[in-house]
Length: 404
Image 1 (cartoon, helix red, strand yellow):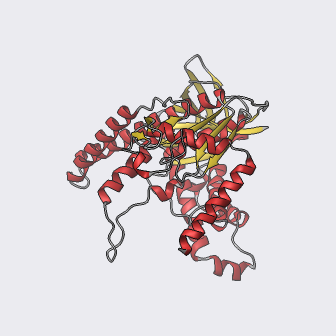
Image 2: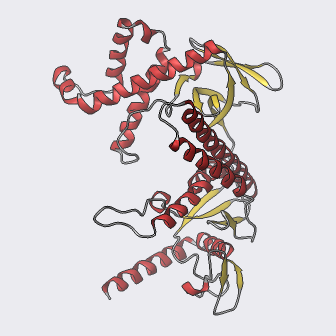
Image 3: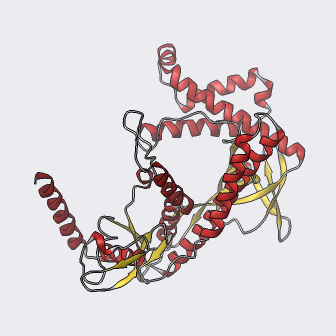
């Protein structure tokens, strides 16, 4: 089995190399935006004049002509600019297939990146802590070596974020997938306990660290909002906001990587709720004609969900357990938090709060998140025929309730 893996490292460029990277990022962003504008505003004129639609190949031909005309374009790697056009092609393919929204323009200060093909880039290790990567038209750049980079190099992306320039190596690896007979586990994602398991344990999520960084970022944002536009004080405050947000994302990503790797090593089947997280984190503010209710409470709930990173956790867990020969099973989230895992009684009043579940039927008391995780495990490990019968029965009950 072949899988693609990414390895990200912090770069230590010189001032000359940093200027070259900024030039690459700005020109690749310009090429991307021009390509989107051409496809959006001029595709009819192009098709009438050329007799064919705009495509990646036609835009590459036009890029070649532009590079011959403008010297500042030819100063930047051709491959990096072609990769920007390839991103435009992928963005439109995803849009027309319904996987994403219409492509938008890239913005300065947000989309600061460019990419090379793997065959153009080489890297080597200098010592225990440092390595060197050779980039076209930039040269040898030192980077912080924190782990090995196995597999065949497919592409290399250079990214600027508030914490500095980074390099990301994307490699293709051959992985032997063995039969996985490890036990099954139910996982419930919540607010009080970010991640609860059906065996009664909880993930040691760094919620205190996350909340502290979020609080510092919001305070810095308040300072920036009071600063005069264009002033150094406002610029420093905005940089502080971005740095804290970047650190928060790094803490969350590190936890999700470590925890999902642990689960993939220990379990063969992971049962998760089939959650539509984008819908769950939508704003409740409504419109002018129909304003929403409890907007502040919903905003706080949305922030909590995004701080934990429910979707990222699921994304990491999916590819890691598949590579380990395991399986992810998604179950219907309905009634998993209100049904008693001991006697099966389904009553909303049994859930006394976000944290406590007390069954009025059998008297069992436990964490509400643990109770939900046990129900998720049972729903995901029932025989397939039983799951189909349960789904059919549920749909029948919904139709009868609607008719009534």
